[in-house]
Image 1: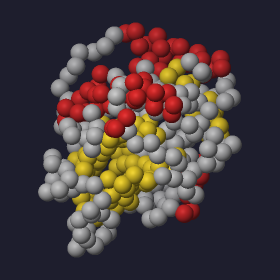
Image 2: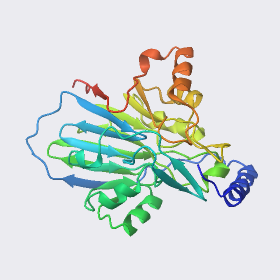
Image 3: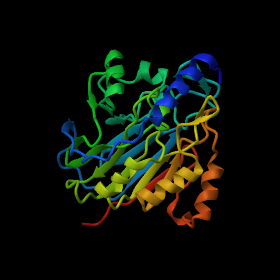
Length: 315
């Protein structure tokens, strides 16, 4: 990683000073706004007996369920390629994606946790169809607008996107996420965690999935299981990413287990853990903490390219 250390370091230390101002008292959380997306599809499509999650690499997964194909945080650079993280920071990719970009199936929806090159790289920026619906943060939405993407769904915390394709229904809700400690996070992109509720009734979904985004564990995370109990599957962005080699901005192994204790998913899949040289906490750290916590039966480990098959609840 190449760093303009004086510029990046000074900015980050100034931001850290801001974190000592204090913590505001908790306020009532608003319900959020609702947006809609209707996709072309077969109105008589049958209810799916199962769905799949395929791990491509970094935070990129393909989620398929009842005729819907969802792509998260698309990153298709190759080993040796570099991404720019801002403030003179760059990082080199250590792996290859399990699928090449041009081999992807048709994508119905992209869920983008935040606008960083290792989550929406230059290749994707150039080659992704401009009509692809993308749901993300307001900050990312502005960047996507400048890039010419036409179907942008900007969600603030607790906002929802109601998606329909034929008889298939999905609700995507933006939930809390913060890219680092309070002081550091002000210099990094805003992050969106997501809850995906599959099924006609989002209050009693057929399947409920949580995607953490690049967050650390902090107080606001506790509101997620309060609003969304019974999470079936959690996709956890790990890696213990450190900028300037010091400031942790994504969960490490211990944080991942703490997140599992808070979210209480039936199953968890670790992702985003070995693809860039700024990731400092390998998967072995998480596996060790999982074993120590007695949570082995709750974790599914996927190698790049592997697929996890899930079964919706019976109604």
